[in-house]
Length: 549
Image (cartoon, rainbow, N blue to C red):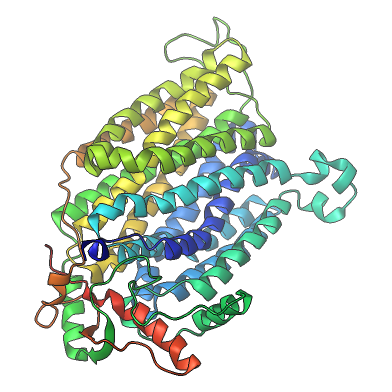
């Protein structure tokens, strides 16, 4: 039965989680192409746009970091699924209001509320870790969400660049429509509500809860989704008498749950208190620091890059250019052209994520790939401002795209790698929600400070003729962020195995139930059958232990 015991990815549930996730990166990246024009429409001077663009992004991230732990703890108490759905709806509402901002103050306040109203980044990471505890499957599983981000990065900038200021870009269609003349940046956000509703609906109807204490409980959303799916089938699917997966029949569980013995609540509280004290270890701290630095400079790079692309071209003369450091100027691109640039950027990142990353880390290892990327990233930051020195517009764009592709490849490898390393540094599955909440908090601080400070440095640089200033600033932080990477030791991480399930009676467990194998696992009535399937999926994961193997 070796083939039955070989773990497999829960592909269906990961796909549903990806659908639930895709709207957020689309919305986030759709802002990039038109943000400089939006800030300019508020009456901000050209040289000051970078400062306010960085601050606008910064308040989103700082608000997100302030509420991330609370969202993580809420998901530990109320479940991953409801918190994700609430976050999606909150983000959708805020994006619609953001698109109708009429002043810089309103835009900043709405972005701050938007950041605080969503903690899905850490929660989704936790769900992936709970779905796929097997180390050999983690590189592919943890590459799914960055792949989704890459897909969103392809579609999002297209929406932002092509649909912003529709009355100006497409006067024959939208010209004379008062709403779009008054709110020129509302259309991309209104269109994106469709994707948010699809994401929230798919999560409600088809996403399974992965929090151990909630998996055995009835989920009316799933029942409706199951009945809806069954009504669309030509023939009703036969329910197997033995389930092979805790979520969708694609990941093998060694025990068949039927009789469920509930653990004592006092033991649960003791396990919870013990787990809380093990959140911070030397390795988790190193991983959190490395992740925070990565978030700091990578997000700041993309933010400053949009302003750099929008900044006017300056003809080089002996008076305004003294190489290697004293020169200025940008690319002078419109929001539509910036959207096209970021779309190409996203396509390349998606290809790297899906095709290159899994075999790369399988051959060289997650940590080794992360180390190499941490050395290459500062070089790309150093080269970025010098692409403006090419004589022709085509030469400048080709040079910048090459640098962007290399930087994007490194970031695409680095982010899922640090996520895997952080997950494997955890001492217990029961702390993953809280740990990822802290990761979101610390990285959110980096995402806030990075764009805000680099935007201010960019403003100072162009005012004084040193466009290299912000890029060298980010390079310095990328170099500092490389140091903790070389101190990280890859941990064994929480795993699931048949042997570990035998130890659950005496050891702390990620789940709140013990499983007793039995041949009978399906009831007779149709409604009981649906409930039984939900309970089976929920409890099949209970063979996971906190003990490392």
